Figure (spheres, rainbow, N blue to C red):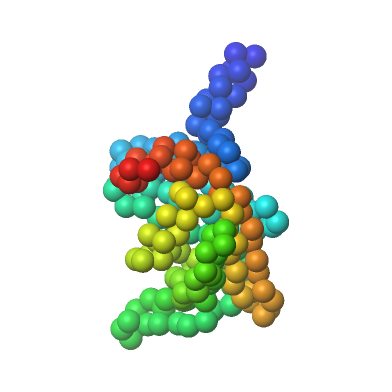
Length: 168
């Protein structure tokens, strides 16, 4: 019985919930002695959609949205015999702001888009200041994928990540 209680207590300490459905999961890569914690926000309308913001084990932030399988809008190969990069046209809109559409890098599994550069900064600001988020992309079958999120509480959840040094 003691083992069960200890296991339940350990799980409760590692995952913390916040307003809007945000969850903070504390993780540590023991092999590299690095923080790999993340926050997760599930879509209100689909089990495929999640916003994930995570530390890569250093000072680097990784942010992506999981989706159903995506239609690839563009491919790019930097050198012959090198890896092929996939991109998907992705649109996101916070609250009543203008919608933004960019080609975002697609995961090898074709079920997530990654934010980088200016898109990462804009998206992170929306997670901090926004209340509602809609993300749209085209599915592999030509269908429109749309995910709705309640981003309320993003500030409280994100401030738990050691890789974010923004004062908000």
